[in-house]
Length: 301
Image (tube, rainbow, N blue to C red; front, side):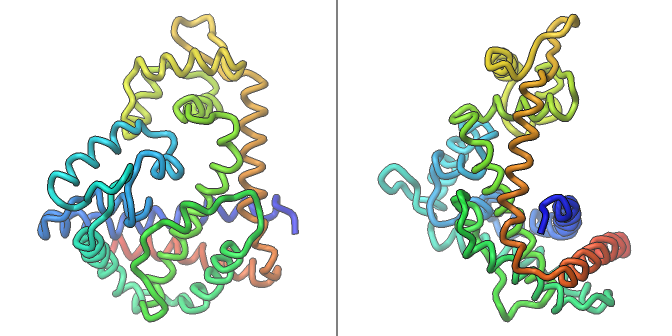
């Protein structure tokens, strides 16, 4: 099975995840306010709700300013949601229960979809479970930190649409694990420089101001990206253009970014060899229908 024939799946999976987010996140945010549960517990659930530390979180998100994590840790500790434990923070059972409650509030919005759709949701869940299980047993350079650590709320007794959402988030986490395994050797602790290379790869030319605006959620300032662009230039990944403060990607930078994308895909799709071609065709068709019907469902609410 050639990786090239499978590449189309990731954008479809990601678009389904975005549709799920659009449906569940508003009620999750409302429930967090109503129940007085920090919304960070929802977002950090993807990073695991056993323990918190800068080092652990950077295995899933090495591209955001780690000071954002540490500031939140201080606040959550002060309010009793997490407790110091050696060099980490232990997440309390109260915090896990709070996260579970607000996530359930979001999933509740999905339940009417089962009568709205004509998709065989149980079949789709079964196909996704095959890939999830194959990922779990795959032997590869992928550490599988993200997919192992993430906090799950669905189980085998959950409605099919909830199981599907969970399996797609597992694939999202495994994709992050694969990209980390493919790219981390090139940036080490300097995730911001890899982010800069990504912006250059997508846009050809960028300024620090443009990156700061487009990635404000990362928590870095303009001067941080100015330094990162200079570092990318020193590595031969970028070069200054004739326009002041503007950088473009070099051929070396482009080849490296494309090499790691290819390696990410190879890692990500290797376990999919457990699927037959008929199953892959069926999965793609079901995911296409799911994306379109989730979109229609959301607009009908």
